[in-house]
Image (cartoon, rainbow, N blue to C red; front, top):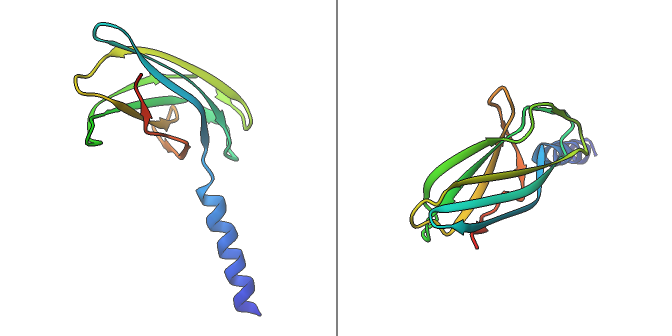
Amino acid sequence: MKFVALLLCLCTLAAAQRRPDVQVLEAKARRVEEGKIAVDGRVKVTGEKPVKGLVIVFDFLSTEGETLTSQKIQVEDDVLDRGEESSFHAATLNPPGSVRFRLRAYDSADRELRLGNSGPYTIE
């Protein structure tokens, strides 16, 4: 009986650790003019702790899934509390050979956040 209770407790803790700090609600990238890509999206804080100074990193990927280059933007300088949403908009140079992108997230202290629904997404 104690074993079952311990196992249940460990499963609950493991599930809580897998919960993302930030969830990607929407992410799109499109080629807007020769040599440029526009990336837009929305994220929501889903973790227990507020996020201060949200930074999103875009990893542009080749057809083989290799990272060609990474770009980052400061999404929010302020603190985002649980349940709050924020949008991001960025324009960057189009890395030659890029067909998809994946997202990563950090806070202002450069701590990597768990990001849900991070991609990869197709560049239109």
